[in-house]
Length: 335
Image 1: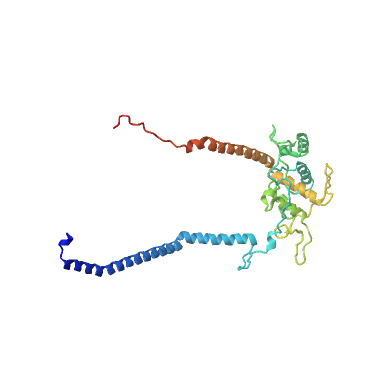
Image 2: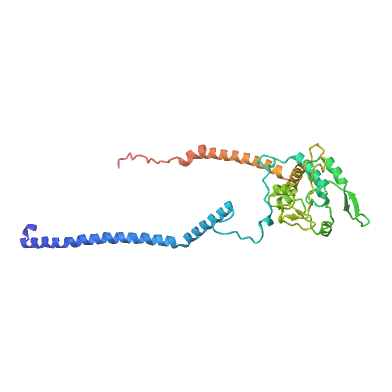
């Protein structure tokens, strides 16, 4: 078919091909450049949209605030911002030392001999001003005293009961179900007997104060003379662990103030340690049982976890990972 075309037509087709080839090459180059530029512009637009999105701004803000807060938590202040306090640092009190209490461990219980001695310190020293409203005589049974000992101590106190058959109130000896008596009949009498200050109830004092047992122990043993330049008004006592440095309660623990039944030397630190242990128990009487229950729960759930892993690995593993293959029957008819 090509042989039938004239030679002039073949020459014209060849020349046209030579003329059009540069344009094709240039167009292909332009297309590649255009595609590359479009890809670069799309990536830059995606980066700009990512940087300008609200999620990115919120994440950056949270990261910055978290970094500043963590630095302030570790070092107290920021290097480029001065300290500004509405009150003096001494108004917060001196932070107590973390003491190694024998009941702080995961598997440790209260020292019940110390609880018994601590109750003796409370009864002979602290009960003159501070109440223990949430503790009944029966709570001491099995912890620091026997039932007979607690019953004898309860009967030493007279409680108002009634009315009787004549409609009158009467006094009776205490029972194990009665709560420990308060030193004052009401708040006004307590303030009148302590120069306007209200002695707090000690039932939950360990939980109610920042620092807990460490704070109470440091407060009881931290009475010192005020330093130079610090004035304490009349009727107040200086203690650096108390917020503000001055409190109405004077020092009450001195060496040999009580005589322990078990012969333990009644030093100031020993009495403070014992009474703080007693108050810690009063604030958390379920402490020992809670730890016992926790140990049992850990053992039980650990056993169940091991059984579940064994069941998952050796029982359900082959079932869930098996491969089911269907082999159709062979066609014996030959179709």
